Length: 184
View: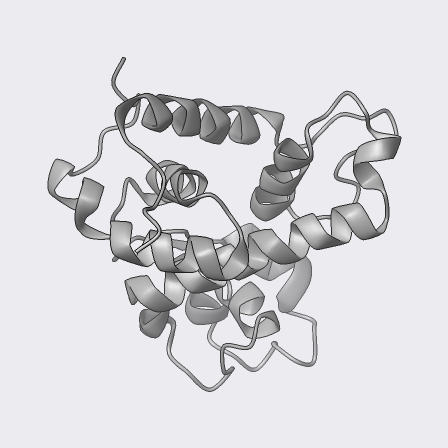
């Protein structure tokens, strides 16, 4: 069964080397990173989405960000649709341009780093134990997409369960078609 998102077949393997490098560096499966990029941008490194609601809710009155260009700092960029402010939290310079987040190496590395940090935090605070009906990777994906606050909710549900399910499905479909990284 083919992956259920339309994306460039040329790009399907174009970024595999980067996915492998970051997979090994951050201990995140290559095909999970690739599934996330397929779901986020259909493997389009130039993908961009301005998040007006994010600006209004979190940044416009925040002294750290209120003097910045909303179209830069309240936007998702690149293959893995990283929010600029999240990239800054991960060590990307605040003085850099959003367009630099469209560099596949930078984008995939920061996404892998974010996933690793979320997973490490989940285990540190025993979140999977408290929400035993959810897979840790489901919680991780949901937090990647929708933030960590109240995710999962007290009742054990994920705010962005549909997103997590779609990435998990794409990951499973990719696993039928291709392998993880070689050890070379």
